[in-house]
Length: 338
Image 1: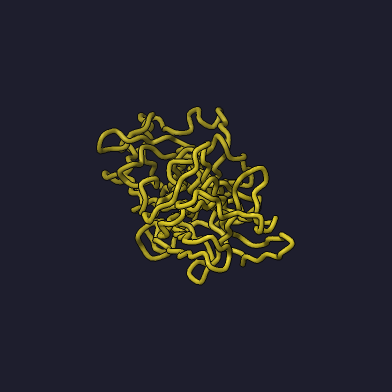
Image 2: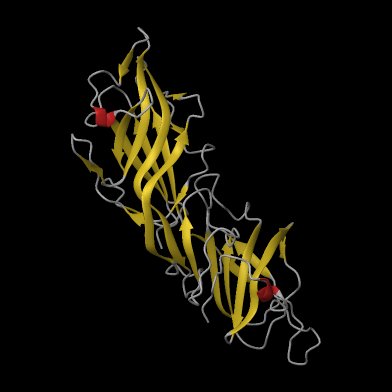
């Protein structure tokens, strides 16, 4: 039985489908309980076992719906839901997601356990599958995995002569939407990984906006994507090589940093200047644009369950060929890719 995760609420499916008559002669009197484990995370914004507060469960037994999008919530050290669902005499397959994203992704009707048109933003989508479970006195173990890629951009400057003021940072020419299918395998297995398909909406995503007050870089790297535009989790995807022409044609995925560079001693703006080509100027702004490829020798693809930290160091006023940057990859789950 494959799970349909519908995007919108269908009230009739929630009436009576989530419980069984306790007095039925064929129904054991053991309620189904849950135990949830979320993956470790390298950064505070990601969901962990400690921060997970609720998840949505679908359960099937012999092609019969046993639980249809039931919300399971943390209650101290345990997990509760209502009304209680009792174990049938047959095997049960459980599928779970968190958070409840049904209200803002389109409804699917193809019968698969697929989340349609999941988009980027502040949602750390996690999922768990537990197959072929039978009546037990202990809770059903649900091991969650991260479905998205987490992207952070760190900015710094080691040059004390310049005041480098950053106004905006964008990730350009990337896929912002895709369909995610849960695996047909219990997620405690290292091979159990969902699948992303139908990547779409190749466009730009702003991950930092100055809100009227640009930030000045220092020698201490700062994560400009943190606590700003709530855009950290992206669709896993292959990355295209970055290229550009002097006529201003850009292709491939890249990071755009909109900034200006001021000489501290004189107070004079040294970049952008009258010599800066038009294609590196930002319209209706004092900024120039510095461009850094998303694809590097270390990072050729964003994988699900991984956190990618792009550490950009701007030390001088030269653009493109001498700006230093050092991308780093941190395992989102602090485990090997699965």
